[in-house]
Image 1: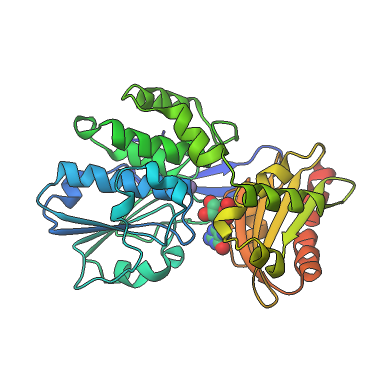
Image 2: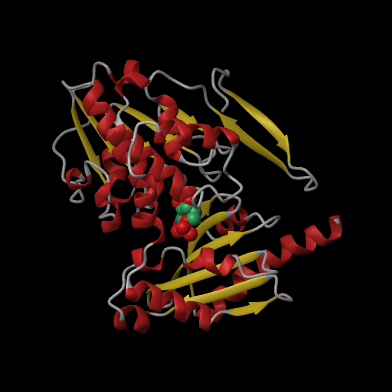
Amino acid sequence: MYTGMQENTRFEELKKGFIVRVVMIMEKFNLLEKCKDAKSIFISGHVRPDGDCVGSCLAMYMYLRKALPEAEVKVFLEEPSEVFRCIKGFDEIDSTFAVEGEADVFIALDCEKSRLGAAEEIFENARKRINVDHHVSNERGCGDINYIDHSISSTAELVYDLFDRQYMDAEIAKAVYIGIVHDTGIFRYSNTSPETLRIAAELIEYGFDFPEMIDETFCEKTYAQNQLLGRALLESIVFMNGKCIVSAIDKKTLDFYNATPKDLEGIVNQLRITKGVECAIFMYATGNLEYKVSLRSCKYVDVSKVAAFFGGGGHVRAAGCTINGTFYDVANNLSKQIELQMKEHEERN
Ligand code: 5GP
Ligand code: MN
């Protein structure tokens, strides 16, 4: 982890790619020092909160409540999946976003401000804004204080780095661990670093039932979720000589299973591991001629660039966006952008 560095910009020439990518590294800051005079501290993360978002927000919530007992600490999130009920503080999440007055400190986790949804306005009005994130699409951070590192597995890993160990306990450790587990696909994705594993080792020493937690929050599927996964796999289409795979769930199917987006998590990851596939696209209908798209890649396609082209963002190997059109329009438009990168890759090799 790049700690103790001056606030600076590091240019990193991506191997083989001749692409110059700017990686912003902000200096680690003293969280408790920055919050010590605050009477109210609000925490929030991105819309459609995932495991890293929920884990990071609740870890931060528990930590600040313990370290700064005088402050009013609140956590705002769109209703997370019930699987995260095993994290302490889950019931204290405010999904109404109803606040009176301004926050002294607002901590935006795992996103830039445009993805805060209903919390964006509260963030804008806060006296001091802190942004902690690892998304490559969040180039500079949107806070007065920013701790952004694109090379780190998860926001949970960054959040843990800010914690004074004297306030750590098993419940906080569990929340951080859930965040890391979800964003690394149980330590399988390429964003897992030796440091990620060292941190995971430290966390499980606090003592919580991590195998049960992984099963409950990551692996277990309801019957309907498995049916939806099955349908998505059955109806998937491979193209570009098997290097790309696409599948969709339409509105009718979502209604039939009474499903929400939370029931579709993991489908794109299953598509991605189809042998020979470099890039997987999964989409579901969010409105009339509107699709929420998830993109994943294995080795060389930068899906954050593909998503950014359509107004979305994310990471090099996992990104998302929303696109208007029919399924075929959306698939065609995405595949053009993916093909451009594939051609560039072929020319280089
Ligand atoms: P997922 O496909 O699991 O929804 O998202 C993959 C990654 O891309 C996550 O880190 C998520 O935060 C990010 N992401 C997904 N959709 C969007 C979007 O519409 N805009 C931005 N900026 N990021 C997104
Ligand atoms: Mn994340």
